[in-house]
Image (cartoon, rainbow, N blue to C red):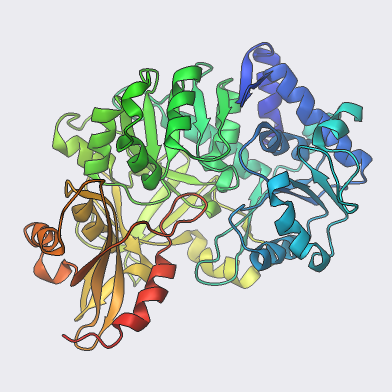
Length: 537
């Protein structure tokens, strides 16, 4: 028997097995899995009543909320393709994405109406825009908001046995950090098998902490437009866990929700976790329910992993993936045959990790051969697996380049050790080449982060007349710190080769970040390139 692999089956299963269990918490609202499933099918019915056809792209411009989560299922029930939009995009970027996707319907949170008003005449494919909450005032908005539309729409359940599992389910756009954003095509099969792989990955560590089950309570601190918020929209649903929504990251609100909802799992980027461990509000809340924090989206450090475990009282591991891989490729729990105590454990759990089930990872040299598993020789990470994208939307040449040789080329430079743990050392485009020597900005950042006065640090390349380029550090200090540039430079020199150390350190109040909290190195490189171009040796 062969049944199509589609995430539509996940909510059907949860509805059947856990109908009365609370599946979604959003503010003061609570929805059982029976209610969650009904609302998703009513969304499907509303789309079909509005004239949606199979394959139509349906866009959502929203922070994390129950309505966006419902779209991950309702849009697919209608046979359409979900396009979650990055809420941090500027008007021109947003217009490009909507025009490129040729989105037919758009659902928008009220706070983003001014942004949409600025571009709506340039986005010709949008036929109808629906307000997610509140009362529509503008004439170009549908007269009923999202909940009012659902209230009058009959539920629709597709015959999922007729779904083509290789058809497009979701279309996510890359950040466009180096060129125009690219639409990443994720199929029903991609999404389905990725969720099962993530669930299976919970069995590959020294304990069952972090396993997904109906007891799991996940706080959606990562925006759902960010590659499924690491795929949790599906994996938590199929096991009957609880989704807890948070519109915007705020440490106090995070602590409040962990205490109130007995949250067991969080997935965050390093800047979010740093804010939690350094928050003065932390001791006021009961965080004992928290079992695991998974750090991804940017490199972690052993120092941060240790701080999380000591101050938040939970296990902390790293996760690795990309939009193109649905997204998870690897996690860094301790394997059963490795020591699980001491500083070595923190160092290993801060690594990129090893491949989850269903994924193969290789680290290749420039000539295409696999590098030695010695933890020293660098190469590019390539991957293949069930969650790897179908390709880039309407960009066959970019797809062919990324998938050369039957493997997805990530652009991440890494080393791999004898236990098959991978450690990213930098992005290809962010390796600093100084006097012919390759310097990993991530390695330098980890040393900086270990300084007791450093809150956040980022290292970029700046032009240099003699060496071509040299490392420069931008550092934010912890409140009350009196650390000076010489103090931190000496700290680095005692732990790194001299050529790797920053040539200068600049103290800043904050660092520019993306919608998911990642530091925007490109902006910093552009800002400091001109200022440093004529630096003396």
